[in-house]
Amino acid sequence: KSSHISLSVQGMTCASCVGRVERVLKKLPGVEQANVNLATERAEIDVTDASLVQQAIQAIQKVGYQAAVVS
Ligand code: 9UX
Image (cartoon, rainbow, N blue to C red):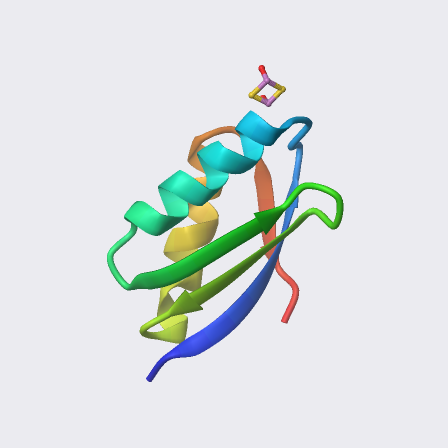
C-alpha cells in the first residue's frame, strides 16, 4: 500500500543538488511524489510500497549524497 517516507539527505549545497535528488527519486518505479528541501535536508516521498525505501536511498547515494530513513 502507499506510504509516505521521510529521508534525511546530507551533502546538498545548492538548488541544483536538490533538483538532481528529486529527479532520481521521481524516476524510480513506485515513487509517486518526491519533494526535497535543502534547508531541512529532507526528502519527503510517497511510494507505492514501503519496501522501496532502500532503492530510494541507493539512488540518492549513487548521485553523490548521503541518505537515511527518518521515519
Ligand atoms: Mo552546484 Mo550542487 O555544482 O552539487 S549542483 S553545488
